[in-house]
Image (tube, rainbow, N blue to C red; front, side, top):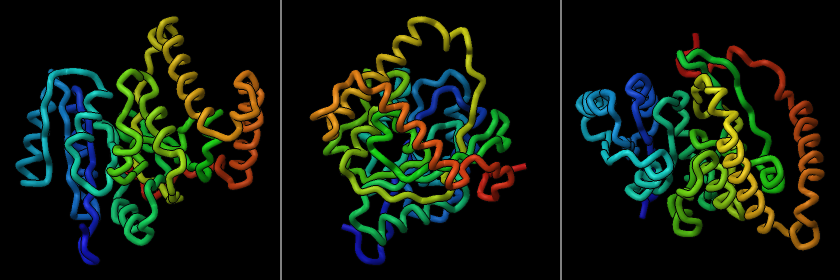
Length: 286
């Protein structure tokens, strides 16, 4: 048990597959944080580039602070779960190997858990950056609403900007390895139901956007699988709500339209569409 002066331990899981180009930036964004009690686990999923050599160089630079686990290639979701199952921290987070944390945000996040012991999940906003690490857009979330998530998706909780107590795995399990395109949405739809959440209205992470292959994205099998996963998340989440006791699932498109209008109106009210192109918390902003 943590004593009154013992900082909570944070486990950060970073899955990596052939991201030698970016993994160094990710590591530095963790090593430079304002919280010392961090268990940083990088799981390499059988990379064929020089990712492992890059990570090992950082292990030498920061002795004892980076744990490298290596495994045969099994895909992103199994790799994340592999890391989660090795985590020993009080709090858990998941940072992708091409993204970064904003400077000095971990201390703020951990203080929320420390000062509010009943809090089970903390989430915040994020920045979008281009492949070269240049700032593109600051994405601000509205306060979390489970019903909005049911009909519009659980994108209020993004993997790089969400932190939760490790004990939630005991109640809700790990990522569903049957999901390929929306495993985080499915996972967050489970751990967000009935748990105590706190929002930090600041950017916590920087997400790197990569060019999407339009040919792959429009392939019939890809489109159908994405839709099937979204439908599965919707049905399971909808059945958790009281709304399902009287509202048929066939009303979902109409309900989604109502929630979408409501979300746009609230974002307008809170000024979320105003450009913030010089946000100083962005790591590496030009």
